Image 1 (cartoon, rainbow, N blue to C red):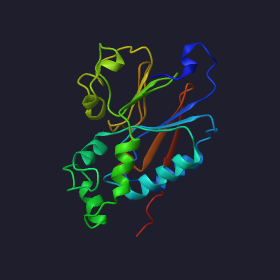
Image 2: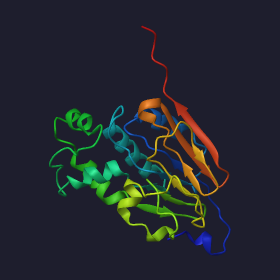
Image 3: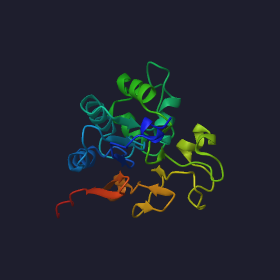
Image 4: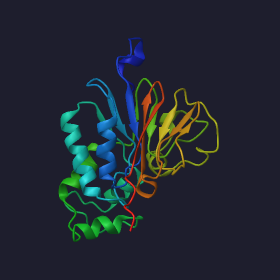
Length: 223
């Protein structure tokens, strides 16, 4: 449900949406330090916190600490989190999911991914979010239908036609999921996955003014 500000009262906050992190904890910390958010502002993470990058467990623990420090954090569930939850029985991860980069997480924990990670993914992440500025999902919604009509699976894994069609859902839809060379900024869609694990660039946007914030991985020292 949208916040009460959508019901005629003044909007007193800004929203910062953060693209796919994929284990890049150093970039995450650098980005959080660079964002000029205030106590009333929202931090909306678009999912895919794990797999592929530097240290997925450290990413989750960094987000847990942020959650303790900042009241208005929203953590969306990406397809990678959904895949991990498919092998989570409420107590342990029974096996690694068949997802790119999951083996790195599994082996870094010797097959014993901490239970707190599964609990956090299950209890804290959510499929979608709406505020006064936009709709937020990991991977898009079905064009030609109201935002709420799209099934959770497609919001996490991708909806046919989302990237190709220009449809007005009433508010912009902000997503990650689709690796892009630069942020996608159109009237009706915003895409923020700039492939941090591969490119070294992690991206965020502030709404409603659409100011882009980016941090970059330090270049490797010359051999």
